[in-house]
Length: 502
Image (cartoon, rainbow, N blue to C red; front, side):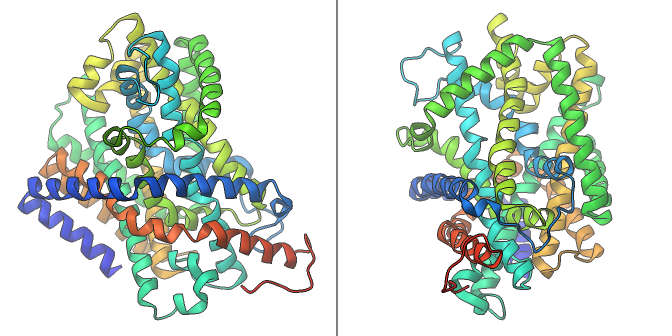
């Protein structure tokens, strides 16, 4: 806690002294991380997905995790919490913007296709699917969750990131370990940076929406009130716990999002959305390996896919802890299917609903979305899309509400998870949950006060922190199958005379 919190405070102090210097340093560090670790991250993400699929659809898929026969949560509530915890960044900021950016400038792995034409639609969506699809979700809670659940529920180890490496180092990584302390610190720092960024961007997006819809000035005070309201919701949710606040907020979030999807399909270009989703998935699956391993335009790759890979890798250890905490009683197959198949398909459909609608309007009226995107950034893109729908003001207000709830669900879940990682307990003290919810909101407010560039710098900083975190996740590629084999023997799924060492 001291290391991660100290580095976060140091970042804020440095930003107060010279935001430009911090931004430049982050940009340089980001460039080095993307250049020297980008290819490694691409292979890590792909290998994690392949191993997770192999385990899920093998005999090991029947393994029951967490030493419990029946799940603690219903399937809908369970998937709702998983979806809401990470989709904040995608659902709020990128679902409208990324498909539009790729439509305006065709991704380089599809040469010869003119931008801003009907032929560009599927490549634009396919690249968005890759960045928020199977690989992104697999790194978050498949192999890591399997290992951490084994360590915590079967071996009685703390719910800390260091437990991920217990099958490799044994108990010496758990107790009085400098390496274990560093693993925990970098994991906490990465997820804190990845959560504070969306909180800050939420203030910008909702403040922009309030000005556009209700003529409320888009000033720092408005952004401050928005973040305070968000953190109040997130704090109450985190304090009441997983089975009350977090579960209720996540369920509301998913149900309300489904209502919005149906509304857009009915009021907007429903046939276009369905056609493009189906057509794009065919291309996405067909080109899965070439897109996931593309190494052509390094500058473009760093700005898009490698940036997202760093973000997801940074979240990896803490999401493994959180998903492990709520998945007790699930089979290994259920876990992998929910996280690595269902969640990305739903995410991709959400991107098609929002981003595909924007592309449809842009095709009909050039500049109707792109001008807002270029002039006002990602907040403007979302508002410009939904305002073109029937009942545009009402729809825009609804999207602002779901924006707030999306980020709140991430904030409450990550406050809870950071508290678990610090204490090692599945039910951490309420005071610690409150502290982390408030501190992340406070840092976001300070960065908003300094300027939007400081929020963007912190968002990019997670890519830098992903460098050490990626080496925590790498051993899971062989440790998760090892753990699965141990559990399969213990549960009588396979029988061997000699048990593997834990």
